[in-house]
Amino acid sequence: MAAPPAIELRGLTRRYGERAALEDVTLTLPAGATLVVFGPNGAGKSTLLRVLATLLRPHAGTTKVLGGELPRDGWSVRGRLGLLGHAPLLYGDLSARENLRFHARLHRVGEERIEELLAQVRLEARAADKVHTFSRGMVQRLAVCRAVLHAPELLLLDEPRANLDPKGAELVEPLIGSAAQATRVITSHDPAGGLAEADLALGLRFGRVELLAPAAEVDAERIGALYR
Image (cartoon, rainbow, N blue to C red; front, side, top):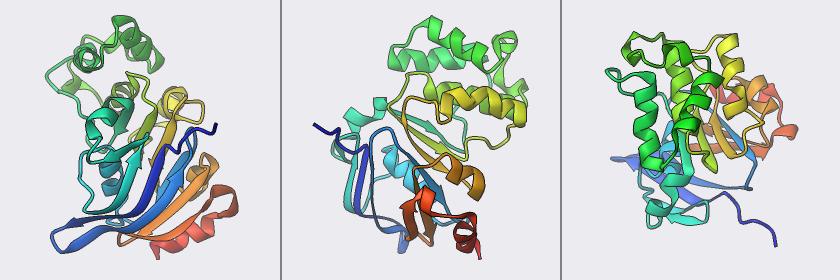
């Protein structure tokens, strides 16, 4: 028996006042697949991630995530998601290790996992230092650790390699890249890089779907047209 889709959207609409941030978005993402979302600033990319993460309620349509219908089943879905947004969701006055311990308690994750992740992103030597002393790249590496701490089934990644130099991007690749054992939804402004790691490409403009196709059938020129 085939596994149910990780994400099913039918006419998803989300408004801010009178403005539709997402309008009539329909797509299906199989479990284990990667969706990359393109579009200019204000296209609705981050709103889509926040709806999928149960942080925003859809106003119309049907939104199913990991078999649960949102917002009704949000409580059963949240612990199976990992969100990496523009805000790192870290406490500056806590150390790197303390930040991960805080989230580990929420997900009942052990100390061994915390140390494993700190080592993976080469922050073990700074684990006792407060996060407000970190560079932007170090904060991003720690935020990746927070997002994957509980081995989520679905990763929601908003420009996940922002603020990372090539070495930093290499360090987090096993955690959020194609080797990650999770379904992924990634927002990107990098047509070539985004398409290379995607199974399905979604292009948004003004909250509406301008492009939805298998990534192998899309080229960078079609993605670039979204930004004109």
